[in-house]
Image 1 (cartoon, rainbow, N blue to C red):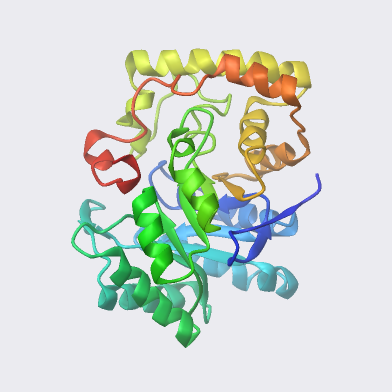
Image 2: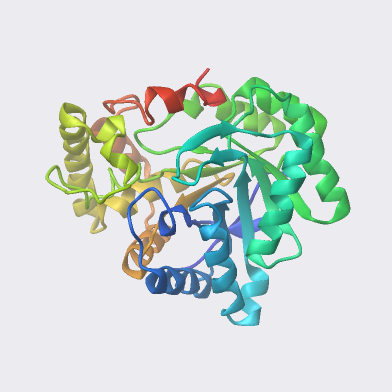
Length: 336
């Protein structure tokens, strides 16, 4: 495996071609092993992964503290190479319930102050609202982050799950490095308008959900018992007939992967990598073995015949079920 680099848009930082999404180490997929999580972050850094993605609401600050601990215990050279992307704005209660979003300027700066403390760093490399706050113009939110950039607390401004019009308004306010949004073989909604707009504006894409929360990893089975707190238990694509339909797509993809001598996860990640040098996939590995498998995708080369076969096996819009519940979908500016 050779780690390549990509740049987040025309104004963002240079980062590893794959980033590590750390959410699952703290939230939404059931209990995680703390020691293994720290070892996985260290293994990622050692392999040349420089982009670590988190959110201040992942485990109500737990994920940021975990990353901070991993960085403190990593060799200085690796620690200095790390680039941390942070999402903010989601409000949660003591029981973990979701209370909405807040992206007012004063709140943006308050969230940033707590994030800096939890991470133990003097700046955030990419700072982004997790969702568009319907009560706050995006210009005000981006303007507040731009002030943090001027003050040295933030290096670059990012966005998450916004549509083309919002991208244009934000980019007219301040330079935007990248848009973080779901993009995978079975989540291709950005291709029609959002991705072309991002490219027109020189905005990169950090793609999350490249394995659709494990659904197209090749490891998920219909009889899998999900742990308490695993949000896939209520996710539409993991329910009943939807799940079986989607797993049938995975089996079609598996045939192609086997012909190339790679895993299903590797060919799914390689497909996202093949979509353009301006796209950086995030892999949500919580264990070193899963990380190693994901990193193997960097050496999977897909030719035109491979891409045609993948397209035939998993056509656009082939997935059954929405990527979030109807309540969560209503919060996505990218879906309007």
